[in-house]
Amino acid sequence: MPDAPLQVCVSGALGAVGRALVRGIDADPAYRLHSAVARREAGRDIGEVVLGRAVGVPVEPDLGRALDRGPDVLIDYTHPAVVRGHVELALQRSIPVVIGTTGLTDTDFEHIDAAARAAGVGAATGNFSVTAALMQHLARFAARHVPDWEIVEHGSATKPDAPSGTARELAELLARERAGPRTPDVAEPVGPPEARGAAIGGARVHSVRLHGSGPAVEVVFGLPGERLVIRHDELGDPSIFVYGSLLAARRVCERPGLVRGLDSLLYGD
Image (cartoon, rainbow, N blue to C red; front, side):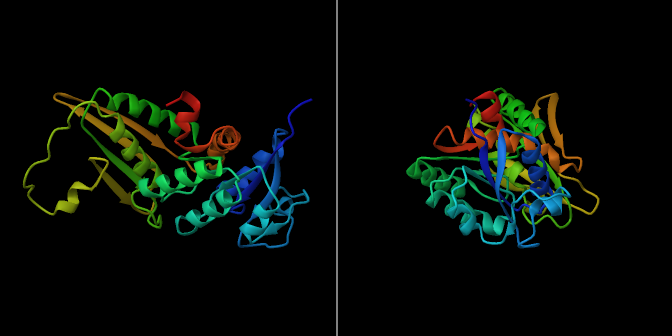
């Protein structure tokens, strides 16, 4: 007999990515929407709001109550201020979780990994776009051969986290790949030290926040006489995160602990 559809709880179901996930789950028989959590439209059928037809799943504002009904996995696309609490609610109930929300740090991920292992379930975090995962994968390879790099990321003027979760995670992951010592910084730079960006993972990360800016991350590798630029741009289509999020949802049900980066699920560590 075929496997039963994976029962998915979507938190942030009325956000841009949440709506795309609802559509993606509805279109794929391997998945079924278990619950839809959002602050708006409580009580309305999520299908009527997103798909134009009822699917029998009401929007509900209480994530804990949705998780109490036992979905197979939680996918969270909400806000940095609440995501840690959402992850804890899921892991306390031994429910695997896919974290699409940005803004968490290495320390957060250490706690999540420990809690997931204690619960015997999986968790995954990262940018779940396939081409963003490919950018990360190629950058990790390059960092094994070139010891010096800086990261520049772009976002809208209203984006709250700086640097973005994608840029922070990239900086932290690349630090683990560096094979040799990086070139030391200038001992006493002239001008405001902030101009050199934030130091994350032993490298400089620069955040651009402007109206008219779309999400983008680039990592610039440099050697004497040459440089390599690897860049990823998001072009305003939230559906780019659906395939990776659903792939991660299935994988976190198979392995305990935290996996960082869709590239680890696609290509291996």
